[in-house]
Length: 156
Image (cartoon, rainbow, N blue to C red; front, side, top):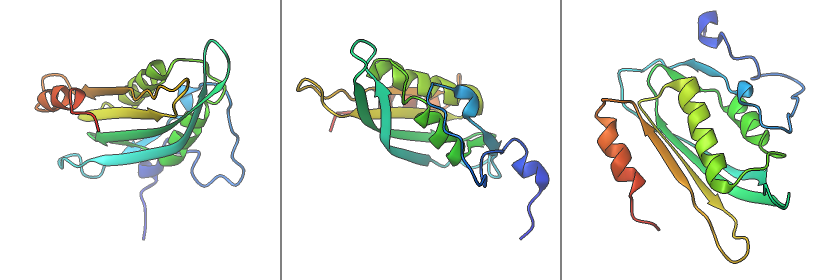
């Protein structure tokens, strides 16, 4: 199976023998590659069950399961770069809601997807569980109505 070198241009982290882990928030870790099917609408789901960030007040760790779902346009996110990017939140102090919105905005900036949503299922602290949800739809597209509907979906 032959691959075009253009297809892998910009993908530098995949296949490295020794991976360097960055412990401070770093959106430059994110990499993308061309979508071979931009004419199709399809959903990509990425799950990170071991997300960790820090409480900005106490410095205590916060744990979450992050769900990312998107309908790609011209690009897809490279999964190893996403893993390293999410790991870079390890020493990042921010509230749950901020982390989810930052992740969403960074992915929108990188990919310019048709639609994207990020949901955080954070482990309860002080007896309260927080599940922030943020989404984006390409302006003036059919996805805007879907984004509004998904934003106000019924909780589990």
